[in-house]
Image (cartoon, rainbow, N blue to C red):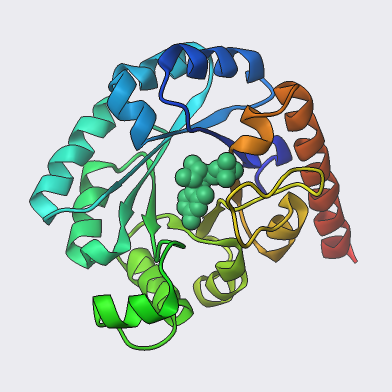
Length: 241
Ligand code: C5P
């Protein structure tokens, strides 16, 4: 089982490198993993990955690659040089594209992004021409990701149970949209507490503003990890029974 503290991935959604690294310094070693998304990566450049490594933490590079397999494979090789801990591609790029990413990144945790939560059911069906519920597509694309050799998916908390039941216990589930009871929802519409997401089967939680905008980010992290530890201990107890 993943150590409770290692379940947390803090989202560095700021563009400013200095501000991002200041937060990393403040939170390491309580936090061991940080998510670098497009905004920070494109403004600070690839050396942001190395800068975070030097401060003792790992990087989830959230670039959501999506292109022809050959191009994604090339991008994957470039990322492999950077020794990123975790990264992702869009499942909608197809099985061959996911396999190409896997070939390029054999030692990195590789996830598929299924259906972005910004899609509404009607638009999803009409614009993309895919029939059926979003949830069914999330399940199908998760199966495709597993077939392609990926380690897991990024999905919304609402989809945890479906993915866990369909894909089995080893397949990783990484979820954003997480809010502790004491935090504001911000612009997140469908939120879940850290403990509930873990109870349903999530492995890693991506949390941004409840930590990055807190008056005391270190204290916010401690409270979240405390709740995760309680939940993990409950899980172990029920396993023993
Ligand atoms: O600040 P907050 O905790 O809402 O940040 C969540 C992080 O997860 C952000 O980096 C956001 O882009 C990302 N994310 C999300 N919802 C998704 C996919 C990714 O909030 N469906």
